Image (cartoon, rainbow, N blue to C red; front, side):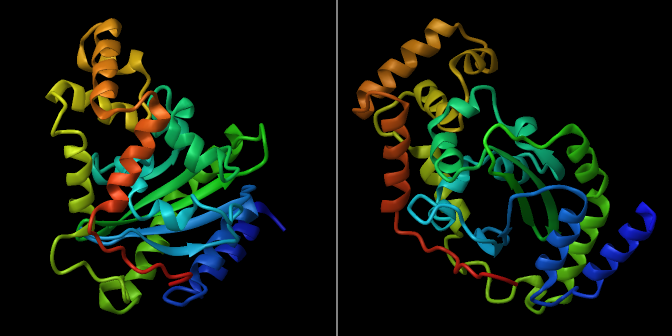
Length: 277
């Protein structure tokens, strides 16, 4: 059987599951037919709300933090979320394409990647209309085994088909593609959480200190922050030192967990997680 014949057969299996609960099982089986993927999940971001877990496989980390914790607020720091929600960037991407310089040394990466045994991530960011989007996350969990260049090329080549099938799947579902995942009627979750992020430490920090703290939380290294803001590295370090003193934290780890506590203590609701759609 030729590659084209195998591709046609595997793609047909996905098409027959459009609009059913087995769609993502079929879609990810199709992807794995061509590229090795250790774990996958699908996060759904309805307009202004969410995120919700549309699909997930067996989680490696049964302890906290995990995907259920991630969707309560830390998703705000996720490079894939930032790309889609703030920059309206869609398509197929590797983590290295979207993450800021220094991201792999950040507390966020240590907590939500390395803790769960994820060593590399790629994903499809797919617009679904009305300011909603889906993130199909594909991960490698074996140490020192990133996605190869050939695998990345194959995943990139499949983007039009994966995106079109996913969009069509949600079009076929009731409630405009978001069954039981309706936008909150008041105080949309994402807007409220983003407000908390924007105002984090605002009561005691200067605007520049807040800007630098926000950049640190997103995983930016001090040199990258200096370049982005057009200031010297020493100035960044001084602002960081002053911000840490005012927030009563000693390092990036304590800063990160103070931010997570601020999110958890906020009176927000979280969209219900669903194992499948």
